[in-house]
Length: 156
Image 1: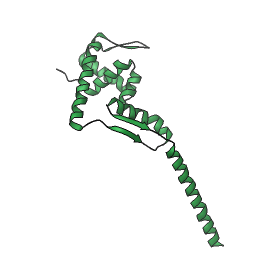
Image 2: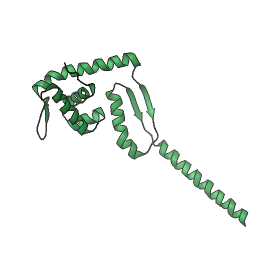
Image 3: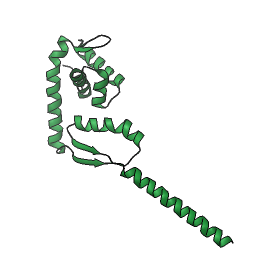
Image 4: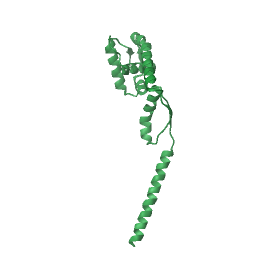
C-alpha cells in the first residue's frame, strides 16, 4: 500500500472544490505550478488520472470522484488530530502596521491560509499606521530644523 502525502491531498481537494488550479493554489497558499506538480505526483502514485482537463475546464475524472470524499475525510481527521494535540485554533483580531504593497500581495494569502487551516482570525487594517508614520516624519523634520537653527545661532 502506498501512502498518500497530505500536501498532495490538500492540493487535490482544493482543485476538486474550486475547479481551478490557480484558485486552488491561492486557497492552499502555494504557487499554481506547485499545485499542478502535486496533482501529477498524486496521479502517478495512484496510476490513475484524477482530472479531465481541457483548455478552459478542470473536472474530476471517475477516479477523482472516488478519491474526493476519502481525501476530504482524511484531511479532516488529520486536522482534528493535530488540534486535539496542539490545542484549539487561533481566534481573534490581528492588527498589523505595514506598507500597502506588502499588504496587498502577501496578507491575502496569509489570511486565506489561516481560514483554510481552521483558524478564526480576522484582519483589521486601518490607516493609523500611515498617519503615525507621517506624524513621526513631521516631528523629525521639525527637530532637524530646530537643531539646524540652534547650530546656526551658536555659530553666529
